[in-house]
Amino acid sequence: MEPNPAHVLIDHALAIDWDRVPADARERTLAFVLDSLAVGVAGRHAAHADGVLAVALGWGEGGRAPVLGRPGLLLPGPSAAFVNGFQIHGQEYDCVHEPAVLHPMATVLAALLADLGRRGEVAGRDLLAAVVAGIDVAVTLGLAAPDALRFFRPATAGIFGCVAALARLRRLPRATALDAMGHALALASGTMQAHVEGKPALPLQVANAARNALVAVDLALAGMPGVTRPLDGPFGFFALMEAREALAPALALLADGHRVTEVSWKPFPTGRAGHGGIVAIQQLMLEQGLTAGALDALDYRAPPLINRLVGRPAKVGMEPGYARLCLAYLGAVTLRRGTVGLGDFTRAALDDPATLALADRIRVIANDNPDQAAFVPAWAEARLTDGTVLHHAVHAQFGSPAWPLDAAQRQDKVRACLAFAGLEHCAAALVAAVGGLAQADDALAGLCRSGVMGV
Image (cartoon, rainbow, N blue to C red; front, side, top):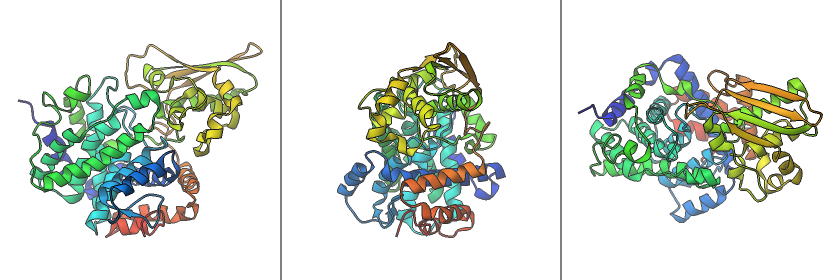
């Protein structure tokens, strides 16, 4: 029988030492911790975030785990993981690993913050090593699934990444960590129907994965054995939730650096599949003078994944989550404002007649790219009312490793996120707190002193 991939992944996670993580991976880990914290703070005002908090409060108050963007509030660990997971992913602003089609930090960081609140003093280097471990495991599972999404992978693969991260944070015995991986299979869920309909169940599924990872670890710590082949068993993760598996090449990558270096920033609070179209329109405006008034029609010809994820039409009454996954709406906003920001998903903005009329002139067309996970190359063609035709090719996604946000752009995003939550005055303190994590004896206390969470 082939080696048990759960064993390979847990052994990898437990062996990660922050001091031996290469410098480029350390830099990216700190950068994405900061980015994800800021996005989670902004998520304080995401659609339905207050409702999610009300539900979590109904499960019981008390506890020591902080909630992002809500200073003074502490919850039991599983409840905090649920709320923070929702807030980090609730506005589609969190980082993404494009080849794996997976948002690794929303689940992993939400689970880790909650466990820090339950455990007391934990060194910052252990938190950072756990982040690296969680990303490695979740992304490896995504890379091992080469076909189109059948289930919502940020949640279904994400829970296994969370368990690996928690195992490394706690330095669990190997047998206990493997039991927790077994329990994760029983607790994994996440449907793409929410994506098709643009419903807030998408971030709820991320929230549930973060919460259930803590449950899986708690069950293992209580001595309950988990299934032994949760990933490659006849009814395991790949058999149930993916069309097929290609584990061997994905596992081999574990010896070749860490997956955090392959993660992309999101420069806009939208589905990642919409970013190429937004940038193409921005470039047509900047370089070729495209304006909303001059546009007759715009086609964005992109890989099938893009059409499947953001090719839906704009419509009156659409949910914010639907609009964030609608390139027609995002492109219309870009043509009218020059960009897409956190404030573009209010009820008034979503139902604006001029924006919706412009959105009717924009469509996504699938090209013949055979790669089911490809975001590029793509081609924007704008036809003007005077008969002129403008073109722009997209070869890389803005925010990707090939075209990353620079330091100033990252700082601008952090400030914008905190300002959206009314906490812009905490931006410098949060940057300093994350920058000092590797030297911190108590990771959570340092982060809470920034003022964006905790007491």
